[in-house]
Length: 456
Image 1: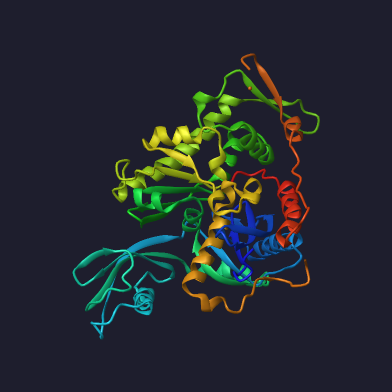
Image 2: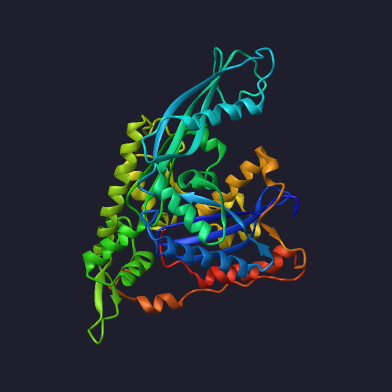
Protein backbone atom coordinates (compact mmCIF):
# COMPACT_ATOMS: atom_id res chain seq x y z
CA UNK A 1 0.00 0.00 0.00
CA UNK A 2 1.25 3.49 -0.82
CA UNK A 3 1.40 5.15 2.59
CA UNK A 4 2.36 8.47 1.02
CA UNK A 5 -1.20 8.94 -0.22
CA UNK A 6 -3.60 10.70 2.14
CA UNK A 7 -6.54 8.98 3.79
CA UNK A 8 -9.72 10.69 2.58
CA UNK A 9 -13.16 10.35 4.17
CA UNK A 10 -16.43 10.65 2.26
CA UNK A 11 -19.56 11.50 4.26
CA UNK A 12 -22.90 10.84 2.51
CA UNK A 13 -25.71 12.57 4.42
CA UNK A 14 -28.83 10.91 2.99
CA UNK A 15 -32.52 10.87 3.81
CA UNK A 16 -32.52 7.29 5.11
CA UNK A 17 -28.86 6.66 5.92
CA UNK A 18 -25.64 8.47 6.70
CA UNK A 19 -22.51 6.66 5.57
CA UNK A 20 -18.84 7.39 6.17
CA UNK A 21 -16.06 5.63 4.28
CA UNK A 22 -12.34 6.22 4.77
CA UNK A 23 -10.10 5.20 1.90
CA UNK A 24 -6.63 5.50 0.46
CA UNK A 25 -5.31 4.73 -3.02
CA UNK A 26 -2.82 1.89 -3.31
CA UNK A 27 0.13 1.64 -5.68
CA UNK A 28 -2.22 0.47 -8.47
CA UNK A 29 -4.45 3.54 -8.14
CA UNK A 30 -7.31 1.54 -6.58
CA UNK A 31 -9.11 2.53 -3.39
CA UNK A 32 -8.37 0.48 -0.30
CA UNK A 33 -11.15 1.05 2.22
CA UNK A 34 -9.69 1.52 5.68
CA UNK A 35 -12.90 2.15 7.59
CA UNK A 36 -16.68 2.10 7.12
CA UNK A 37 -19.57 3.23 9.30
CA UNK A 38 -23.21 4.04 8.80
CA UNK A 39 -26.23 5.13 10.79
CA UNK A 40 -29.94 5.65 10.27
CA UNK A 41 -30.72 9.22 9.26
CA UNK A 42 -33.48 10.94 11.24
CA UNK A 43 -32.95 14.67 10.69
CA UNK A 44 -32.89 14.75 6.89
CA UNK A 45 -35.87 15.01 4.53
CA UNK A 46 -35.66 15.08 0.73
CA UNK A 47 -31.90 15.44 0.98
CA UNK A 48 -32.02 18.54 3.22
CA UNK A 49 -30.97 18.79 6.85
CA UNK A 50 -34.01 19.97 8.81
CA UNK A 51 -33.01 18.88 12.30
CA UNK A 52 -29.40 19.75 13.02
CA UNK A 53 -29.27 17.98 16.38
CA UNK A 54 -30.62 14.69 15.05
CA UNK A 55 -28.32 14.88 12.02
CA UNK A 56 -25.34 15.59 14.27
CA UNK A 57 -26.10 12.48 16.33
CA UNK A 58 -26.38 10.34 13.19
CA UNK A 59 -23.11 11.69 11.80
CA UNK A 60 -21.34 10.99 15.09
CA UNK A 61 -22.73 7.44 15.11
CA UNK A 62 -21.56 6.84 11.54
CA UNK A 63 -18.08 8.19 12.33
CA UNK A 64 -17.89 6.19 15.57
CA UNK A 65 -18.81 3.03 13.65
CA UNK A 66 -16.14 3.89 11.10
CA UNK A 67 -13.58 4.20 13.90
CA UNK A 68 -14.79 0.95 15.44
CA UNK A 69 -14.05 -0.81 12.17
CA UNK A 70 -10.51 0.53 12.39
CA UNK A 71 -9.49 1.96 15.78
CA UNK A 72 -6.22 3.21 14.27
CA UNK A 73 -8.05 5.86 12.22
CA UNK A 74 -8.14 9.51 13.20
CA UNK A 75 -10.81 11.49 11.36
CA UNK A 76 -11.09 15.28 11.35
CA UNK A 77 -11.89 16.41 7.81
CA UNK A 78 -14.57 14.99 5.47
CA UNK A 79 -15.80 15.47 1.93
CA UNK A 80 -19.58 15.91 2.18
CA UNK A 81 -22.22 15.22 -0.46
CA UNK A 82 -24.99 17.77 -0.95
CA UNK A 83 -28.39 17.40 -2.66
CA UNK A 84 -31.99 18.58 -2.13
CA UNK A 85 -34.76 20.54 -3.78
CA UNK A 86 -32.86 23.79 -3.34
CA UNK A 87 -30.04 22.82 -5.75
CA UNK A 88 -30.05 24.79 -9.02
CA UNK A 89 -27.63 25.21 -11.90
CA UNK A 90 -26.86 27.84 -14.52
CA UNK A 91 -24.50 28.34 -17.47
CA UNK A 92 -22.08 31.28 -17.63
CA UNK A 93 -19.17 32.53 -19.69
CA UNK A 94 -15.93 33.98 -18.38
CA UNK A 95 -12.83 35.52 -19.99
CA UNK A 96 -9.56 37.09 -18.89
CA UNK A 97 -7.13 39.18 -20.95
CA UNK A 98 -3.54 38.07 -20.43
CA UNK A 99 -0.63 40.45 -19.94
CA UNK A 100 2.24 38.27 -21.09
CA UNK A 101 0.65 37.00 -24.30
CA UNK A 102 3.77 35.20 -25.54
CA UNK A 103 4.10 33.12 -22.38
CA UNK A 104 2.42 29.76 -22.08
CA UNK A 105 -0.81 29.63 -20.06
CA UNK A 106 -0.14 28.16 -16.64
CA UNK A 107 -2.44 26.42 -14.17
CA UNK A 108 -2.63 29.49 -11.91
CA UNK A 109 -4.28 31.48 -14.71
CA UNK A 110 -6.84 28.73 -15.27
CA UNK A 111 -7.49 28.62 -11.54
CA UNK A 112 -7.94 32.41 -11.45
CA UNK A 113 -10.48 32.24 -14.30
CA UNK A 114 -12.45 29.64 -12.35
CA UNK A 115 -12.23 31.62 -9.11
CA UNK A 116 -13.58 34.72 -10.87
CA UNK A 117 -16.84 32.85 -11.57
CA UNK A 118 -17.58 32.69 -7.85
CA UNK A 119 -18.45 36.39 -8.17
CA UNK A 120 -21.23 35.61 -10.67
CA UNK A 121 -24.53 37.25 -9.73
CA UNK A 122 -27.01 34.78 -8.25
CA UNK A 123 -30.33 35.38 -6.44
CA UNK A 124 -30.17 36.58 -2.85
CA UNK A 125 -30.28 33.72 -0.40
CA UNK A 126 -28.35 31.38 -2.68
CA UNK A 127 -24.69 30.42 -2.57
CA UNK A 128 -22.38 28.99 -5.23
CA UNK A 129 -21.43 25.41 -4.38
CA UNK A 130 -19.28 24.56 -7.38
CA UNK A 131 -17.95 26.05 -10.61
CA UNK A 132 -17.30 23.44 -13.31
CA UNK A 133 -15.47 24.39 -16.52
CA UNK A 134 -17.06 22.88 -19.65
CA UNK A 135 -14.67 23.84 -22.44
CA UNK A 136 -11.96 26.49 -22.77
CA UNK A 137 -11.08 28.90 -25.58
CA UNK A 138 -7.78 30.65 -26.32
CA UNK A 139 -8.30 33.47 -28.82
CA UNK A 140 -9.74 31.69 -31.91
CA UNK A 141 -9.09 28.17 -30.67
CA UNK A 142 -12.33 26.53 -29.48
CA UNK A 143 -13.32 23.48 -27.42
CA UNK A 144 -10.01 23.08 -25.61
CA UNK A 145 -10.21 20.59 -22.72
CA UNK A 146 -7.06 21.93 -21.03
CA UNK A 147 -5.57 25.30 -22.08
CA UNK A 148 -2.27 25.00 -20.19
CA UNK A 149 0.64 25.20 -22.63
CA UNK A 150 -1.24 27.37 -25.13
CA UNK A 151 -0.38 31.01 -25.60
CA UNK A 152 -2.63 33.90 -26.60
CA UNK A 153 -4.29 37.17 -25.63
CA UNK A 154 -7.62 35.99 -24.21
CA UNK A 155 -8.37 32.92 -22.14
CA UNK A 156 -12.04 32.03 -21.71
CA UNK A 157 -14.38 29.22 -20.83
CA UNK A 158 -18.02 28.20 -20.51
CA UNK A 159 -19.00 27.18 -16.99
CA UNK A 160 -21.67 25.11 -15.27
CA UNK A 161 -22.38 26.73 -11.91
CA UNK A 162 -24.16 24.85 -9.14
CA UNK A 163 -25.95 26.86 -6.46
CA UNK A 164 -27.86 26.05 -3.31
CA UNK A 165 -29.84 27.73 -0.56
CA UNK A 166 -27.56 29.37 2.01
CA UNK A 167 -29.61 28.09 4.95
CA UNK A 168 -29.57 24.53 3.65
CA UNK A 169 -25.81 24.69 3.18
CA UNK A 170 -25.34 26.22 6.62
CA UNK A 171 -27.39 23.42 8.20
CA UNK A 172 -25.07 20.83 6.66
CA UNK A 173 -21.98 22.70 7.81
CA UNK A 174 -23.36 23.12 11.34
CA UNK A 175 -24.29 19.46 11.60
CA UNK A 176 -20.81 18.40 10.54
CA UNK A 177 -19.17 20.94 12.82
CA UNK A 178 -21.26 19.93 15.84
CA UNK A 179 -20.19 16.34 15.18
CA UNK A 180 -16.59 17.47 15.74
CA UNK A 181 -15.57 17.46 12.07
CA UNK A 182 -14.51 19.95 9.42
CA UNK A 183 -16.10 20.06 5.97
CA UNK A 184 -13.20 19.90 3.54
CA UNK A 185 -15.52 20.47 0.60
CA UNK A 186 -19.19 20.21 -0.35
CA UNK A 187 -19.67 18.09 -3.48
CA UNK A 188 -22.86 17.80 -5.53
CA UNK A 189 -24.01 14.21 -5.01
CA UNK A 190 -24.76 13.33 -8.67
CA UNK A 191 -21.24 14.44 -9.60
CA UNK A 192 -19.74 12.28 -6.87
CA UNK A 193 -21.82 9.30 -7.96
CA UNK A 194 -20.85 9.91 -11.59
CA UNK A 195 -17.16 9.83 -10.70
CA UNK A 196 -17.64 6.43 -9.04
CA UNK A 197 -19.64 4.64 -11.76
CA UNK A 198 -18.67 6.29 -15.05
CA UNK A 199 -15.59 6.01 -17.24
CA UNK A 200 -13.96 8.49 -19.62
CA UNK A 201 -15.32 6.67 -22.69
CA UNK A 202 -18.88 6.99 -21.41
CA UNK A 203 -18.38 10.70 -20.76
CA UNK A 204 -17.23 11.11 -24.34
CA UNK A 205 -20.08 9.05 -25.81
CA UNK A 206 -22.70 10.79 -23.69
CA UNK A 207 -24.39 9.42 -20.64
CA UNK A 208 -27.03 10.31 -18.04
CA UNK A 209 -26.33 9.38 -14.42
CA UNK A 210 -29.56 8.78 -12.46
CA UNK A 211 -28.82 8.44 -8.74
CA UNK A 212 -31.99 7.23 -6.97
CA UNK A 213 -31.60 8.09 -3.32
CA UNK A 214 -33.96 7.96 -0.37
CA UNK A 215 -35.44 11.45 -0.62
CA UNK A 216 -34.40 12.66 -4.06
CA UNK A 217 -33.22 11.41 -7.44
CA UNK A 218 -30.16 13.24 -8.73
CA UNK A 219 -29.37 13.65 -12.42
CA UNK A 220 -26.11 14.50 -14.19
CA UNK A 221 -25.84 14.57 -18.01
CA UNK A 222 -22.48 14.35 -19.77
CA UNK A 223 -21.67 14.63 -23.49
CA UNK A 224 -18.35 14.83 -25.33
CA UNK A 225 -16.54 14.78 -22.02
CA UNK A 226 -18.45 17.81 -20.71
CA UNK A 227 -21.01 18.15 -17.93
CA UNK A 228 -24.07 19.48 -19.73
CA UNK A 229 -26.76 19.54 -17.04
CA UNK A 230 -27.51 18.70 -13.42
CA UNK A 231 -30.91 18.46 -11.72
CA UNK A 232 -32.53 17.23 -8.52
CA UNK A 233 -35.85 15.36 -8.87
CA UNK A 234 -37.95 15.61 -5.67
CA UNK A 235 -38.79 11.89 -5.41
CA UNK A 236 -36.85 8.85 -4.29
CA UNK A 237 -37.02 5.49 -2.56
CA UNK A 238 -38.75 6.92 0.51
CA UNK A 239 -41.67 8.05 -1.67
CA UNK A 240 -42.07 4.51 -3.01
CA UNK A 241 -42.15 3.17 0.55
CA UNK A 242 -44.84 5.69 1.56
CA UNK A 243 -46.86 4.83 -1.56
CA UNK A 244 -46.79 1.14 -0.57
CA UNK A 245 -47.71 2.00 3.02
CA UNK A 246 -50.74 4.03 1.96
CA UNK A 247 -51.77 1.88 -1.00
CA UNK A 248 -51.69 -1.42 0.88
CA UNK A 249 -52.57 -0.17 4.35
CA UNK A 250 -49.46 -1.57 6.05
CA UNK A 251 -46.89 -0.25 8.50
CA UNK A 252 -43.96 1.70 7.10
CA UNK A 253 -41.51 -0.99 8.22
CA UNK A 254 -43.49 -3.66 6.40
CA UNK A 255 -43.77 -1.39 3.34
CA UNK A 256 -40.00 -1.03 3.23
CA UNK A 257 -39.51 -4.76 3.62
CA UNK A 258 -42.02 -5.48 0.86
CA UNK A 259 -40.19 -3.10 -1.46
CA UNK A 260 -36.73 -4.46 -0.75
CA UNK A 261 -37.49 -8.17 -0.75
CA UNK A 262 -40.36 -8.56 -3.20
CA UNK A 263 -40.71 -5.27 -5.08
CA UNK A 264 -40.56 -5.02 -8.88
CA UNK A 265 -40.57 -1.91 -11.06
CA UNK A 266 -42.47 -3.74 -13.81
CA UNK A 267 -46.05 -5.01 -13.37
CA UNK A 268 -45.81 -7.37 -16.36
CA UNK A 269 -42.87 -9.17 -14.72
CA UNK A 270 -44.81 -9.89 -11.49
CA UNK A 271 -46.80 -13.13 -11.23
CA UNK A 272 -50.49 -12.72 -10.46
CA UNK A 273 -50.53 -15.94 -8.40
CA UNK A 274 -47.81 -14.87 -5.96
CA UNK A 275 -48.87 -13.51 -2.58
CA UNK A 276 -46.76 -12.21 0.31
CA UNK A 277 -47.92 -12.79 3.87
CA UNK A 278 -47.20 -10.14 6.49
CA UNK A 279 -47.91 -10.62 10.21
CA UNK A 280 -51.09 -9.15 11.68
CA UNK A 281 -51.14 -6.53 14.43
CA UNK A 282 -51.94 -7.50 18.04
CA UNK A 283 -53.66 -10.78 17.30
CA UNK A 284 -55.19 -9.77 13.98
CA UNK A 285 -54.90 -12.37 11.21
CA UNK A 286 -51.95 -12.16 8.78
CA UNK A 287 -52.44 -10.03 5.67
CA UNK A 288 -51.81 -11.27 2.14
CA UNK A 289 -50.39 -8.87 -0.44
CA UNK A 290 -50.47 -9.54 -4.18
CA UNK A 291 -47.02 -9.25 -5.78
CA UNK A 292 -48.65 -7.79 -8.89
CA UNK A 293 -50.45 -5.09 -6.87
CA UNK A 294 -47.15 -4.25 -5.16
CA UNK A 295 -45.39 -3.95 -8.51
CA UNK A 296 -48.14 -1.68 -9.82
CA UNK A 297 -47.56 0.80 -6.98
CA UNK A 298 -43.80 0.78 -7.50
CA UNK A 299 -44.02 1.13 -11.26
CA UNK A 300 -46.31 4.16 -10.99
CA UNK A 301 -43.83 6.11 -8.86
CA UNK A 302 -40.75 5.00 -10.80
CA UNK A 303 -42.46 5.99 -14.05
CA UNK A 304 -43.00 9.46 -12.61
CA UNK A 305 -39.31 9.76 -11.71
CA UNK A 306 -38.24 8.58 -15.17
CA UNK A 307 -40.65 11.03 -16.80
CA UNK A 308 -38.72 13.80 -15.01
CA UNK A 309 -35.47 12.35 -16.37
CA UNK A 310 -36.88 12.36 -19.92
CA UNK A 311 -38.05 15.96 -19.45
CA UNK A 312 -34.60 17.16 -18.44
CA UNK A 313 -32.96 15.27 -21.31
CA UNK A 314 -35.25 17.01 -23.80
CA UNK A 315 -34.65 20.39 -22.12
CA UNK A 316 -30.94 20.22 -22.95
CA UNK A 317 -31.36 18.53 -26.33
CA UNK A 318 -29.83 15.26 -25.15
CA UNK A 319 -32.16 12.70 -26.69
CA UNK A 320 -31.42 9.04 -27.25
CA UNK A 321 -29.37 9.81 -30.38
CA UNK A 322 -27.02 12.11 -28.48
CA UNK A 323 -26.33 9.89 -25.47
CA UNK A 324 -24.72 6.80 -26.95
CA UNK A 325 -23.67 5.70 -23.46
CA UNK A 326 -27.32 5.50 -22.38
CA UNK A 327 -28.47 5.80 -18.76
CA UNK A 328 -26.55 4.63 -15.72
CA UNK A 329 -28.80 3.92 -12.72
CA UNK A 330 -27.17 4.05 -9.31
CA UNK A 331 -28.06 4.72 -5.67
CA UNK A 332 -29.99 2.33 -3.43
CA UNK A 333 -33.20 2.73 -5.44
CA UNK A 334 -31.51 1.32 -8.52
CA UNK A 335 -31.59 -2.15 -6.94
CA UNK A 336 -35.31 -2.56 -7.65
CA UNK A 337 -35.96 -5.62 -9.79
CA UNK A 338 -36.71 -4.95 -13.48
CA UNK A 339 -35.84 -1.26 -13.23
CA UNK A 340 -33.53 -1.51 -16.24
CA UNK A 341 -36.37 -2.84 -18.41
CA UNK A 342 -38.73 -0.06 -17.26
CA UNK A 343 -36.08 2.61 -17.88
CA UNK A 344 -35.34 1.37 -21.38
CA UNK A 345 -39.06 1.13 -22.21
CA UNK A 346 -39.87 4.67 -21.03
CA UNK A 347 -36.77 6.49 -22.31
CA UNK A 348 -35.92 4.47 -25.42
CA UNK A 349 -32.29 4.37 -24.26
CA UNK A 350 -29.99 1.60 -23.10
CA UNK A 351 -29.61 1.37 -19.33
CA UNK A 352 -27.40 -0.38 -16.81
CA UNK A 353 -26.76 -0.36 -13.08
CA UNK A 354 -23.72 1.62 -11.99
CA UNK A 355 -21.43 0.04 -9.40
CA UNK A 356 -18.33 1.70 -7.92
CA UNK A 357 -16.37 -1.58 -8.28
CA UNK A 358 -14.08 -0.21 -10.99
CA UNK A 359 -12.30 2.00 -8.49
CA UNK A 360 -12.09 -0.43 -5.58
CA UNK A 361 -9.36 -2.91 -4.79
CA UNK A 362 -10.49 -6.42 -5.74
CA UNK A 363 -10.46 -7.77 -2.19
CA UNK A 364 -13.24 -5.39 -1.19
CA UNK A 365 -15.54 -5.37 -4.20
CA UNK A 366 -18.01 -7.89 -2.76
CA UNK A 367 -18.58 -5.89 0.42
CA UNK A 368 -18.48 -2.35 -0.88
CA UNK A 369 -19.43 -2.34 -4.56
CA UNK A 370 -23.10 -1.60 -4.01
CA UNK A 371 -24.92 1.22 -5.82
CA UNK A 372 -25.99 2.78 -2.51
CA UNK A 373 -22.36 3.58 -1.74
CA UNK A 374 -21.55 5.19 -5.10
CA UNK A 375 -21.80 8.70 -3.67
CA UNK A 376 -19.48 7.92 -0.75
CA UNK A 377 -16.85 6.31 -2.98
CA UNK A 378 -17.19 9.23 -5.41
CA UNK A 379 -16.54 11.71 -2.60
CA UNK A 380 -13.21 10.01 -1.88
CA UNK A 381 -12.35 10.14 -5.59
CA UNK A 382 -13.18 13.87 -5.55
CA UNK A 383 -10.75 14.24 -2.68
CA UNK A 384 -8.05 12.53 -4.70
CA UNK A 385 -8.79 14.77 -7.67
CA UNK A 386 -8.09 17.74 -5.39
CA UNK A 387 -4.99 16.03 -4.05
CA UNK A 388 -3.60 15.38 -7.51
CA UNK A 389 -4.19 18.99 -8.57
CA UNK A 390 -3.37 20.83 -5.32
CA UNK A 391 -1.00 18.61 -3.37
CA UNK A 392 -0.05 21.39 -0.94
CA UNK A 393 -3.51 21.38 0.60
CA UNK A 394 -2.84 17.87 1.88
CA UNK A 395 0.56 18.40 3.48
CA UNK A 396 -0.90 18.40 6.98
CA UNK A 397 -3.13 15.35 6.86
CA UNK A 398 -6.04 15.52 9.25
CA UNK A 399 -7.12 11.94 8.57
CA UNK A 400 -4.48 9.39 9.32
CA UNK A 401 -3.72 6.00 10.84
CA UNK A 402 -2.01 5.88 14.19
CA UNK A 403 1.47 4.39 13.84
CA UNK A 404 1.05 2.07 16.83
CA UNK A 405 -1.53 -0.27 15.22
CA UNK A 406 -0.02 -2.85 13.19
CA UNK A 407 -39.79 -18.63 -8.00
CA UNK A 408 -42.75 -21.77 -9.64
CA UNK A 409 -45.96 -21.70 -11.56
CA UNK A 410 -48.22 -22.94 -8.71
CA UNK A 411 -49.69 -20.38 -6.34
CA UNK A 412 -46.98 -19.31 -3.90
CA UNK A 413 -47.28 -17.89 -0.41
CA UNK A 414 -44.11 -16.34 0.95
CA UNK A 415 -43.42 -15.60 4.60
CA UNK A 416 -41.49 -12.36 4.99
CA UNK A 417 -40.05 -13.31 8.35
CA UNK A 418 -38.58 -16.59 7.06
CA UNK A 419 -37.09 -14.81 4.06
CA UNK A 420 -35.04 -12.63 6.35
CA UNK A 421 -33.35 -15.66 7.94
CA UNK A 422 -31.82 -16.94 4.70
CA UNK A 423 -28.67 -14.91 4.56
CA UNK A 424 -25.11 -16.12 4.26
CA UNK A 425 -22.12 -15.14 6.28
CA UNK A 426 -18.91 -13.66 5.04
CA UNK A 427 -15.60 -14.80 6.47
CA UNK A 428 -12.36 -12.97 6.06
CA UNK A 429 -8.90 -14.49 5.84
CA UNK A 430 -6.43 -13.00 8.26
CA UNK A 431 -3.21 -14.89 7.51
CA UNK A 432 -0.26 -12.65 6.65
CA UNK A 433 -2.17 -9.44 7.35
CA UNK A 434 -1.24 -5.96 6.42
CA UNK A 435 -2.92 -3.10 8.31
CA UNK A 436 -5.75 -3.25 5.76
CA UNK A 437 -6.06 -7.02 6.07
CA UNK A 438 -6.24 -6.75 9.85
CA UNK A 439 -9.29 -4.49 9.74
CA UNK A 440 -11.07 -6.07 6.75
CA UNK A 441 -12.97 -8.58 8.89
CA UNK A 442 -14.42 -5.88 11.13
CA UNK A 443 -15.54 -3.81 8.12
CA UNK A 444 -17.35 -6.83 6.70
CA UNK A 445 -19.01 -7.47 10.05
CA UNK A 446 -20.38 -3.93 10.14
CA UNK A 447 -21.74 -4.34 6.62
CA UNK A 448 -23.52 -7.51 7.72
CA UNK A 449 -24.87 -5.94 10.91
CA UNK A 450 -26.09 -2.93 8.97
CA UNK A 451 -27.55 -5.08 6.14
CA UNK A 452 -29.48 -2.66 4.04
CA UNK A 453 -33.17 -2.78 4.73
CA UNK A 454 -33.67 0.45 2.83
CA UNK A 455 -33.21 0.92 -0.87
CA UNK A 456 -31.81 4.36 -0.98
